[in-house]
Image (tube, rainbow, N blue to C red):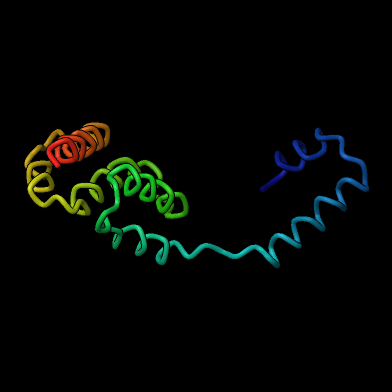
Length: 123
């Protein structure tokens, strides 16, 4: 990290005991923390579809959870939006959403939830 990082570390004014404790904790974390496999995490995300009898809200919540370890960075909202569009069980709504070139994540969520509410009220 260079000389600047060393200066910052010194500014923390940690005792020798605190420095050793941090080092040992770091070694234990390196040894026992399961490393995330980004490819596997993305595969789970990209294969996720709304299950039978699963609410739209539950489906979307799970997409957010699955995206946490996928390192999507700046594309996260767009990828969640796209997964909603192609993962919805309502194929008619999915087709409608695909035709909107200005579709945002918020709009996709709103339309999916509203569509589900309308269908539940008709039943």
